[in-house]
Structures are given as structure tokens and as C-alpha cells.
Image 1 (tube, one colour):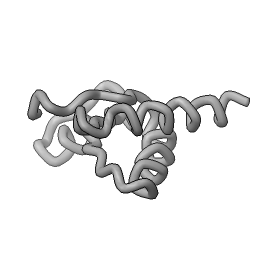
Image 2 (cartoon, one colour):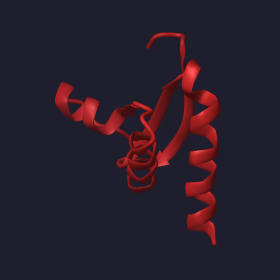
Image 3 (tube, helix red, strand yellow):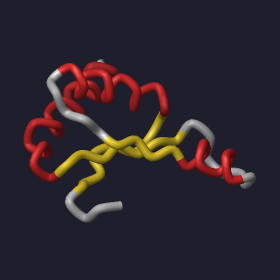
Length: 77
């Protein structure tokens, strides 16, 4: 992965999809890495199904982090 991208979330597929939807809504295009799906396509397994990582460009980091924080805070309340 290009070093100009930064991981902003690691965890559940469901929460990752909420975050991706909110990022897309403000014009941020995240990259989602899904080890389970990658392993399935390659014929291997993954130890943590439904586990995803979200990356954004360093240029979009300042706008993306508050969105991730708000989604997580909303789910915890």
C-alpha cells in the first residue's frame, strides 16, 4: 500500500461500512482492506472473519478522523 495512506479504523465490517458511507458522503474516498475476502479469493482462510481496515490519503486525514470518532461515539452511546 502506498505510504501516503494512513489507517484510520480497524474492526467490524458493519462499523467499517458505516464509516465508509459517511466518508463517501463528504467526498473522501477510503480504501477498505478485507483480509477475509482477500484470503477467500486466494484460497486461504482468515482467523478473524468480518475484520476490515480503512485507509485514507494523508491529505484527507484531518477531515476523516472526526468522522470515525463520531461514528464510534454514536455507537457507544
